[in-house]
Amino acid sequence: MNAPKRSYVAVAVTEIAFGTVGLLLGAFVPSAPASRLAAASIGIAVILLGVATAWLGPRVPADWGLDISIGVGGGLIAASTLFMQTAQGQMSEGMLILAIGVLAGMIRPMARVVALLAWMLAVYDIAWLLNPRIEGVVALVMVNAIVAVVTSVVLRMGHRLRVLAHRDPLTGALNRRGLDLLVQDRMAAGMRGASSATVLVLDLDDFKGFNDRYGHSAGDALLAEVAAAWRRELAPEDLLIRIGGDEFAIIFPAASRGQVEEVVKRLRRAHPTSWCLGLAVWDLRESLESVLASADREMYAAKRRPKADLEASGTGYMSADDPAHT
Image 1: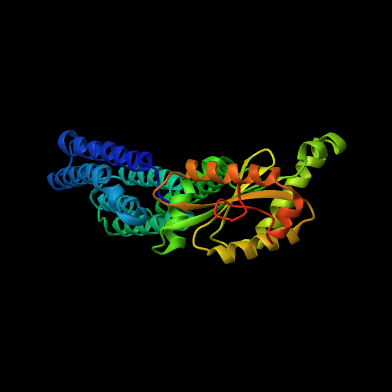
Image 2: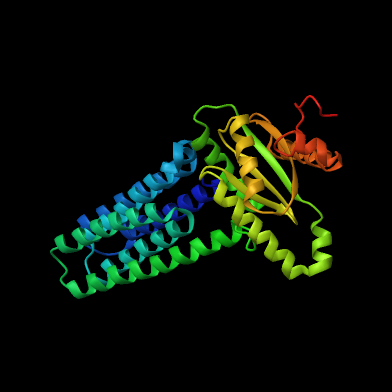
């Protein structure tokens, strides 16, 4: 998923802040000249990295700019442990790595965070062990344990928060926020150079009447059952979205019209609840809002058509390019 620009800003600001601290330590804290020079040099390098992250990072494909920046910045900070004069200084570097790990856990996928954290801790451990001024393996183990435990907790919490923010809690389908964040990345991965996608908007028949007859709890259970049944019929790259109420959308990134019609037939067999749908072809040069509105109009047109006409279409809908469409 393409990371929002604020993720790059967060990493850049963090690196500039940490780099500034290193530069000030090198300039004003009394220590051996070599240590002061190393602290100042690493501080300047991390500041420049932060500036480059804000300016160039978003241009790197697949958000590798974020991972490269976090890995390089964290590696430089971890390497500075080699020049610390005291165990307290080395442990403070470990806390900076913890802060970077927490930030990464909030904005990056779990697999990449684990790889980045393993890299930073490896550099940190090697620098600690090579530092001739400091002894204390117990403290090193404690720092590693603290960083690993806290980051793992943040990763789990971040994952749960992202799920809650991006998915409808009742049906498990994407909500509109989740769709907006995922669609660009999923389209790019699934379409392989195609210029269009297919969008369906689906609306359950007489859902209000069902709620009135059986209650809202039964209505919620029905929505969850229908969404689960549909999800089993969709490919991993297809996107199921709950737009609101009993209205859903499905986006097929790279399916042909015939493939979509076959999926629609399977969706109808997957659950006995009846529904109408509208279909629109998404030219990726137009906005998502525009194509959803077009499919929504076709869905309401389908609701107004006689049932026999819809059944005669084979899939139970009429789209804008069907000859019988009026």
